[in-house]
Amino acid sequence: MVDLNSDLGEGLGVWRLGDDEALLSIVTSANVACGFHAGDPSTMRRVSAAAAGRGVRVGAQVSYRDLVGFGRRRIEVPPDELADELLYQIGALSAFGPVAYVKPHGALYNTAAVDSGHASAIVAAAAQAGGLPVLCQPGSVLAQLAAERGLRVVAEGFADRAYQRDGRLVPRTSPGALVTDVAAVSARAVRMVVDGVVEADDGSVIPMRIESLCVHGDTPGAVEMARAVRAALADAGVPLAPFS
Image (cartoon, rainbow, N blue to C red; front, side, top):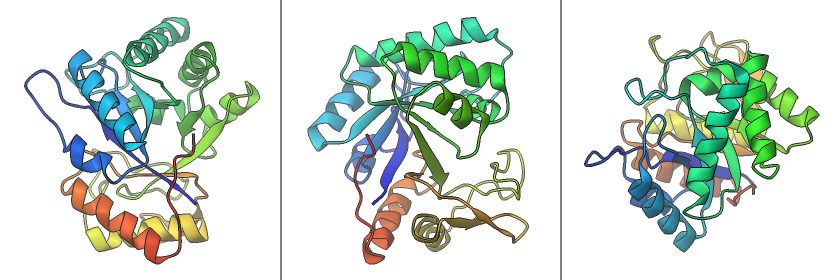
């Protein structure tokens, strides 16, 4: 059994990014933007309500305060101040319905994988918000600190992102960071879930045991990709269900 998640609610005002409605008919968990990298109150309300109607769990997709950079730029913030900003985002989303978990977005996700200061801020916010589970990269600093705090750690894999030999994601600024071939994405998804491994960008095979699989909502062809991943998992005998 595995959870299938996607980053949703990343529109802002009159702008829409991705097809939230279509993806909510495919995924089992929705990482909803909380206004700091994307999203706004009306979008949070709309996506939260639609998710609840489909039995999809909602998680807070928290970020650095970076609307201009879509949360994909590392920002140096004191950990205690960052924790306050993350808790603020979780609280904003919880006004529109239950929040089942926390997942950092973009640069914060990658920074927290290796930086104890920013990872500790995420842990502090999740703990203060009621001990929410943390969806993150397996083997990361964030995973270690969350576990030490007694939070549930949910290991996440990315079907549509390339990995380096050390298990970290290939930076989006590098060629080949996104995997956009639907067949390749589906095959990678099944291999991660069934075999617990993924092929890195240098051809090596690395461990990747996960509980939740992500298909990004802003990846080109995201809806087709998510449908194909879900179908491939079903063909492999893997049922889908929210982890939370």
